[in-house]
Length: 380
Image 1 (cartoon, rainbow, N blue to C red):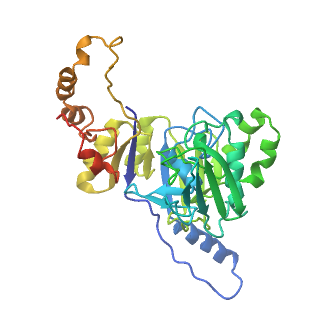
Image 2: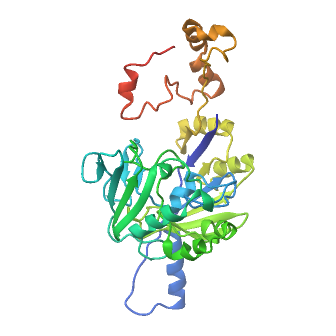
Image 3: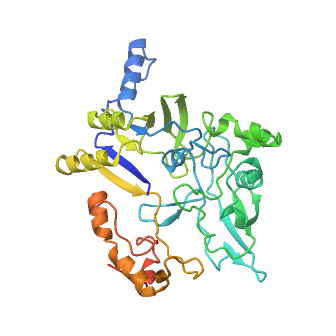
């Protein structure tokens, strides 16, 4: 299993100064004092991350040391999102498609169409309007032949993407696709992510894969529509981002974010303890996480949480010609194996009780889980 460790200290807001405004021109000393006070009142969040990414775009034609949703979400915006209770909500769209309405139509031949109305006055970080044509541009150009990992759902189920005006977007589906209402799937599958046509059109027009992949747009010159815009990228050291005033969901309450690259986990841990960083994202060991959680439980200086990002599953071979030993073809033997695995003790001893014991591979917090829970067999 792979996990992400996160630790957050309590002090994320710097000292607050008071700004005063006069009617006349400010003297040099006054200007300096105002600049200092402005800096003091900024809300700055400093985080350590485990490695320097080679791209921050939510959809990029690059593999290797890629970004994770921690900072991809900082810079990018999507048609939809999930809140803290796993409820899908519209993001760039005014509303999400609803089956059997004018926003989600199933045709007699089995094909479908979903329709979106984008929110008004959407803009990219550089101030250029973000329109439905940017989504069409993504579908037409972010293809496997151009190096993108879009040969999977939902892209593989889409037949075409069209725009009738700047705010009207339609997706035509090849066949019934039950997840068409929410394209965001999992931590790093963001669905139909808009790409800025005004920036990338000439890059894709070259038709040269190397030119597309080596474009600085995917990293140091990234322009998105997310809550923060890339301000500075110091190679080998840090990334700085500032709050985007015209963000679709409103300006973030944090003014500036600094991501420090810390490959050494002990260094990242020491920085959290010293208060030099406010958050550790994937940059500390599980033992560090446990220590922080235990300490902060009493002094309330911060919170610590763990999030699983992969699932290990044991599966039985049911084909008689492959089953070995043959005993596993007997359902009583398979039940015995399941009863024999003490999952609760496994969680408590190896993972300090942080892993919840589930009876299925489905998330118990999902809205449909009660229907599953009523019919499955459980093996405590």
